[in-house]
Length: 209
Ligand code: PRP
Ligand code: URA
Image (cartoon, rainbow, N blue to C red):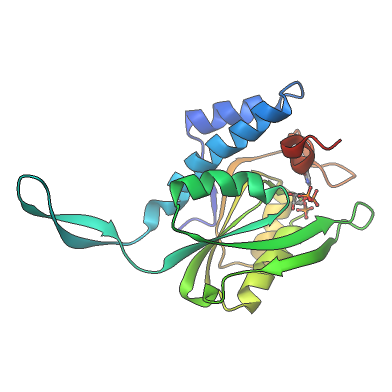
């Protein structure tokens, strides 16, 4: 599997473009995050293993394919990750859910941890970490390390936007974890924001600014 998957489906690109616009309202932004999460999730799940099982339709018994292999665990990086989490849970309702509470110190751009709770059997599950923004990647690297420390070995990382600097740093730290994103933007600015980006994802989802 490629280590950076840019999901360039027209629906994803259209929704992302609407989210970038500064006049997009909080309610619309939140709805779009949820919709785009469904579409990203569809792509992330493309390689899930299936097995042949027998079912009985109203007409006859037949062999069909159903999901097999490790169960899934979605892990949201608080708080903006919860926007993506909602849409992904609509797609995979039986997934277990973990939370990593991190915020980025605005001066140092280093992540500060304030919460961590994941299912006790996370080591037996495939993990999909969700956070809309991969900027310096400091938060993502720390979040992946936390779930690895809990025993997870099969991990995918999903975001809306990634900066090239963050992608490189992330892959240097966790070369085994593929990144799924709706777009790779131009660069980081001096404050560690993705350019052109969409601003502060948490503020835009929750209207806190
Ligand atoms: C944002 C975003 C990521 C992080 C990305 O969270 O949701 O977690 O910044 O930046 P980085 O790649 O440079 O670490 P933020 O710290 O603003 O917290 P919030 O989700 O609580 O708003
Ligand atoms: N966090 C955000 O929410 N936006 C950015 O552009 C960078 C970090």
